[in-house]
Image 1 (cartoon, rainbow, N blue to C red):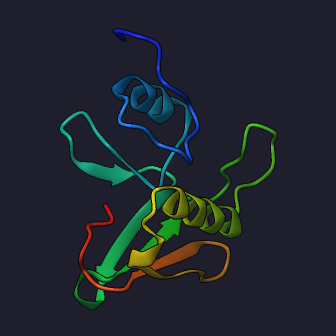
Image 2: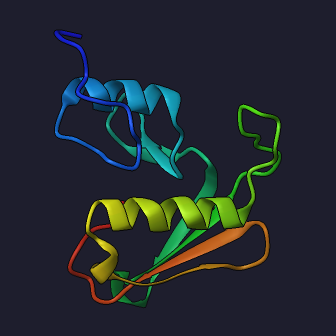
Amino acid sequence: MDSMPAGLNVFNPTNDINAYILLTTIHLGLVRHNEKDEIVPSLSTHWSVSEGGRSYLFHLRKNVYFHNDQLIRCKDVKASIWYTAVSMKKMQSIESIECLGESKVRIVLKSKVMRLI
Protein backbone atom coordinates (compact mmCIF):
# COMPACT_ATOMS: atom_id res chain seq x y z
CA MET A 1 0.00 0.00 0.00
CA ASP A 2 1.31 3.39 -0.95
CA SER A 3 -0.69 5.45 1.56
CA MET A 4 -3.29 5.23 4.28
CA PRO A 5 -6.84 4.57 3.06
CA ALA A 6 -9.40 7.37 3.18
CA GLY A 7 -11.74 5.17 5.24
CA LEU A 8 -12.90 1.60 5.82
CA ASN A 9 -16.69 1.93 5.83
CA VAL A 10 -17.79 -0.91 3.56
CA PHE A 11 -21.14 0.84 3.08
CA ASN A 12 -19.56 4.08 1.94
CA PRO A 13 -17.12 2.97 -0.75
CA THR A 14 -14.54 5.35 -2.05
CA ASN A 15 -12.39 5.41 -5.16
CA ASP A 16 -9.41 4.88 -2.86
CA ILE A 17 -7.63 1.69 -4.02
CA ASN A 18 -6.00 1.23 -0.61
CA ALA A 19 -9.40 1.20 1.11
CA TYR A 20 -10.69 -1.25 -1.48
CA ILE A 21 -7.76 -3.63 -0.91
CA LEU A 22 -8.22 -3.55 2.87
CA LEU A 23 -12.01 -3.93 2.69
CA THR A 24 -11.83 -6.95 0.40
CA THR A 25 -9.51 -8.69 2.83
CA ILE A 26 -11.80 -7.96 5.79
CA HIS A 27 -15.32 -8.30 4.33
CA LEU A 28 -16.71 -11.13 2.23
CA GLY A 29 -19.19 -10.60 -0.57
CA LEU A 30 -21.47 -13.05 -2.33
CA VAL A 31 -18.79 -13.43 -4.99
CA ARG A 32 -15.14 -12.49 -5.37
CA HIS A 33 -12.45 -12.34 -8.04
CA ASN A 34 -9.85 -15.09 -8.05
CA GLU A 35 -6.21 -14.72 -9.08
CA LYS A 36 -7.24 -15.05 -12.78
CA ASP A 37 -9.78 -12.22 -12.27
CA GLU A 38 -12.67 -14.66 -12.72
CA ILE A 39 -15.82 -14.21 -10.64
CA VAL A 40 -16.11 -17.12 -8.19
CA PRO A 41 -18.35 -17.88 -5.17
CA SER A 42 -17.57 -16.45 -1.74
CA LEU A 43 -20.54 -16.24 0.66
CA SER A 44 -22.61 -17.85 -2.07
CA THR A 45 -22.01 -21.40 -3.27
CA HIS A 46 -23.35 -20.64 -6.73
CA TRP A 47 -25.77 -18.34 -8.54
CA SER A 48 -27.91 -18.08 -11.63
CA VAL A 49 -28.96 -15.16 -13.80
CA SER A 50 -32.32 -15.15 -15.56
CA GLU A 51 -35.03 -12.92 -17.01
CA GLY A 52 -32.75 -11.37 -19.58
CA GLY A 53 -30.07 -10.52 -17.03
CA ARG A 54 -32.46 -8.81 -14.58
CA SER A 55 -32.78 -11.49 -11.88
CA TYR A 56 -29.86 -12.87 -9.86
CA LEU A 57 -30.43 -15.83 -7.53
CA PHE A 58 -27.64 -16.53 -5.03
CA HIS A 59 -27.48 -19.77 -3.04
CA LEU A 60 -25.91 -18.93 0.32
CA ARG A 61 -23.16 -20.93 1.94
CA LYS A 62 -24.33 -22.69 5.09
CA ASN A 63 -22.75 -22.33 8.55
CA VAL A 64 -21.07 -18.96 7.99
CA TYR A 65 -20.71 -16.77 11.06
CA PHE A 66 -20.04 -13.14 11.88
CA HIS A 67 -17.04 -12.29 14.06
CA ASN A 68 -19.34 -12.43 17.12
CA ASP A 69 -20.34 -16.06 16.42
CA GLN A 70 -23.82 -15.16 15.16
CA LEU A 71 -24.93 -17.12 12.13
CA ILE A 72 -25.20 -15.08 8.93
CA ARG A 73 -28.78 -15.34 7.74
CA CYS A 74 -30.50 -14.35 4.53
CA LYS A 75 -32.01 -11.28 6.19
CA ASP A 76 -28.46 -10.08 7.02
CA VAL A 77 -27.38 -10.48 3.40
CA LYS A 78 -30.54 -8.70 2.20
CA ALA A 79 -29.94 -5.80 4.61
CA SER A 80 -26.29 -5.48 3.53
CA ILE A 81 -27.22 -5.42 -0.15
CA TRP A 82 -29.95 -2.84 0.46
CA TYR A 83 -27.72 -0.59 2.58
CA THR A 84 -24.85 -0.80 0.10
CA ALA A 85 -27.16 0.00 -2.83
CA VAL A 86 -28.58 3.02 -0.98
CA SER A 87 -25.08 4.23 -0.05
CA MET A 88 -23.89 3.88 -3.63
CA LYS A 89 -27.07 5.57 -4.94
CA LYS A 90 -27.94 2.43 -6.94
CA MET A 91 -31.32 1.68 -5.30
CA GLN A 92 -33.14 3.23 -8.26
CA SER A 93 -31.79 0.33 -10.38
CA ILE A 94 -33.09 -2.39 -8.03
CA GLU A 95 -36.68 -3.60 -8.24
CA SER A 96 -36.49 -6.00 -5.29
CA ILE A 97 -34.25 -7.91 -2.90
CA GLU A 98 -35.92 -10.94 -1.38
CA CYS A 99 -35.07 -13.93 0.77
CA LEU A 100 -36.29 -17.29 -0.45
CA GLY A 101 -36.01 -19.19 2.78
CA GLU A 102 -32.74 -18.93 4.70
CA SER A 103 -30.47 -20.16 1.93
CA LYS A 104 -31.32 -18.06 -1.14
CA VAL A 105 -31.43 -14.36 -1.91
CA ARG A 106 -32.80 -12.94 -5.17
CA ILE A 107 -31.98 -9.51 -6.53
CA VAL A 108 -34.17 -8.24 -9.36
CA LEU A 109 -33.04 -5.21 -11.34
CA LYS A 110 -35.55 -2.81 -12.91
CA SER A 111 -33.79 -3.22 -16.23
CA LYS A 112 -30.54 -4.64 -17.49
CA VAL A 113 -28.84 -1.27 -17.34
CA MET A 114 -26.15 -2.29 -14.91
CA ARG A 115 -24.14 -5.43 -14.44
CA LEU A 116 -24.60 -6.73 -10.93
CA ILE A 117 -21.57 -9.04 -10.85
